[in-house]
Image (tube, rainbow, N blue to C red; front, side):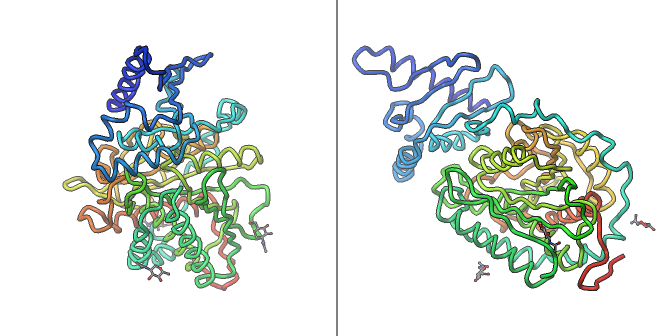
Length: 437
Ligand SMILES: *[C@@H]1O[C@H](CO)[C@@H](O)[C@H](O)[C@H]1NC(C)=O
Ligand SMILES: *[C@@H]1O[C@H](CO)[C@@H](O)[C@H](O)[C@H]1NC(C)=O
Ligand SMILES: *[C@@H]1O[C@H](CO)[C@@H](O)[C@H](O)[C@H]1NC(C)=O
């Protein structure tokens, strides 16, 4: 945020400088859009404006020229919100200029397609505390028949594969290819581990980019068709601070994606199926574009009148900072208090790791998109926010780091399984004849 103020200040200063020069026409206009909040509007021809010089001069020439190309290529204007302070400036920037915010490590929500009628204040039906059970019926012992099917070797192989794409940037060909790989991988798990599970992959097509969000719907004959869905999610895309560079994204959010894939594999192998509520696994596209993918999904769910019992998101769950105690970070801002309190009751029954409550700030991940339209959401992360992976959005976000731990990711798989079994039930009359007690 400090860096952001600097950028805004730079833009404002340059605006004044440019508009004050009588000889040249203004290239950057600071307009106050009535009513508040004011917008800082930058026209699409701005790659050639002087304001970029301080930024570009810090990059090597090749990267500077690629960045200029990126800014020119993605010129559609987007509205970006940087904080939930109603008086804060919204930025109106070309899509490509999101790279400048990434470069400054500033988080934002792309609110261009916000629909006032869908926002939370119109739908504030956050589940009342009573809708989540007071007690937890399962524990690590009773869930062992499912936990025994979590395999670190498989997780390793999957993540090696996922991170081998050059990047998973939502606007790149690589991002589309990694999505296709992910989809084929889940189809393969379904076909080989338990083809009779009623599991359907529904790719969600987005408005202006090709990488799709993958939604896996799982139900069973005992689930009433009108029961609200129990959602669990991570984001599949990755980005470097410069979007055209390599971005292995092992932790961000390859770790959450791996946790979800391992959860699906363990549940399929264990012959589990939901009993009371349908389950949906969401692998969002374009989290790095300002929660774009989850924003479109959450708005579509609202428009379609879909019911959601709970939405539980995992972003960066694989990094344990040296000389800290491994823990499960439970995010306390931008979430449903009832659902978060429920998770803090549940986690000690399924994992031996301590729970630490931590704030992650505005726009920190996709649960925010669901919260914004009034669905109850929660978010888990690798520990205390200040201890999280410093290599995010760089080429060093790899699984080879000494502090990257699939054992740590495995604890989140246990929590995910516990959450799904508790909130969606466990129908033990599986067609495979596997009876698990
Ligand atoms: C798990 O719950 C069972 C009863 O359902 C109990 O006998 C067992 O001791 C519990 N195990 C743990 C590790 O809490
Ligand atoms: C990734 O998976 C594909 C298909 O399953 C396989 O052909 C390829 O060798 C894997 N690559 C890595 C790096 O694991
Ligand atoms: C499988 O699930 C879909 C919804 O995802 C549902 O429409 C269909 O009826 C289910 N099929 C069976 C055999 O239960």
